[in-house]
Length: 233
Image (cartoon, rainbow, N blue to C red; front, side):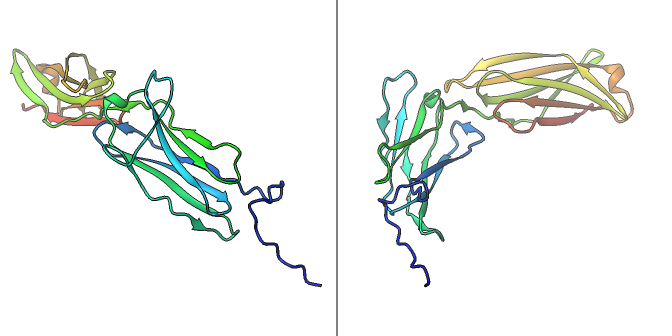
């Protein structure tokens, strides 16, 4: 006799039918101030289609979290469930906002409720580490001096302050590193800017195909930034 198929019921909670929701975070590489951010959690494996999602924010140092409403700087996107081949459901919880440095150290919490759960599931973003990505709007400034050339670069609006800058002289197969001096300024929005100066001797400038290059690295960047300037000789 052919075995009759079984109809899913949310009351079937033995080990063979674990229909409680499972939450998986979608990683975010950088939290950049002034740039839109989408926090996402994939929710899957639940039955029936009765999942409820709420978002909370816990400010740095606050004793408790507060419910996020779909207004002001926050946009809570639709979490419509999709049926799966195994008769369970899945959806993606999404929260869109643009972080500022005021969000530094706060947590965004995704709370999921479902009839199969005794207690709501929670996932936290962890303490937000908001970064300001470097802006390099101007080319390298070149100023002639006595038996040397001065190269200056302005980098703006980065956070945090830690930054690595390196000046290089490139000539055929030879690469030489030059010392530099940096002058930092603090901006109104609590980001930082820096002017980096490097002096290159005239004797080096006369080398064949000589080029000056500057590179910089910052935690808000996946790859180093760089600019190139000719010796003008």
